[in-house]
Image (cartoon, rainbow, N blue to C red; front, side, top):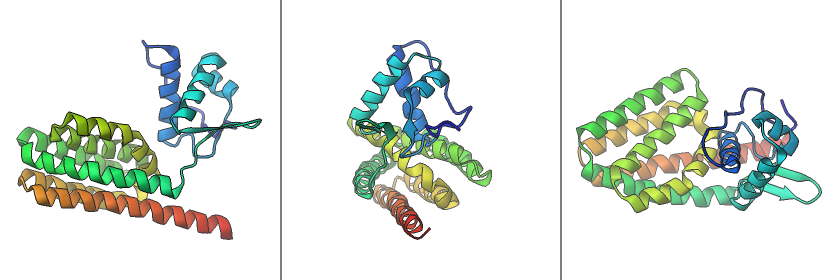
Length: 233
C-alpha cells in the first residue's frame, strides 16, 4: 500500500493515443471514482508518477485539474488529497440525479422496443451475478451500465449530456453502498424493466424515482453511521 492509499496492482494502464496529461488525468480519476484512492488519501506526486510510468509534470497538471473539478483538494504546505465529500454535496448531486433519471425512465418507456428491453435484461443478469459473487466493483460497473442504457434508450441528447456530467460522481457515491444495496437494487431494476416493457411512463417514472431515492437514503444512513463510529470508536 502506498502512502497515497493506492494498492499495488490497482493502477490502470495508460490508454494510447492521446495527450499524456489527459491520460494521466483519466487514470487518476478512475482510481478516485472506484475508490482505489479513497477520500482523504494523500496523493504523492512522485509515487503516482512512478506507478503510472510517467514524469511528475503530467501528474502535477492532472492534480491541478482534478482540484479545479472538485475531485482533489490542494492544501498549502501539505500537498494533494482526495476530496472528502460532505453530506450536503452528496445530497445535492443525488437529488439532481433523481430528477434526470426519472425523466429518462419516462422517455425510455415511451420509446423502447424489444431490443432495448433485452439489453436491459442482460445488464440485469450481469449485475445480479456480481451481487451473488460479492463482486462490488462488478456490481458498481453493471449498475452504471444499466443506468447509462436507460439514458440511451430515452433518446434525449441534452438529458444524456447532463447525466454524463454527474455520472462519475454518482458512481463515486454509489461504490461504498453497493454491497448494502445489494440484491434489492437489482430487484428494483427488474421492476423498472417491467414498467418500460409495458410502456407505462408514469410507473417507470415512479419506480426510478423511488430507486434513486433509496440509494440516496442509504448513502446518508451509511455516512451517519460512519460519523457515529468515528466519534465513539
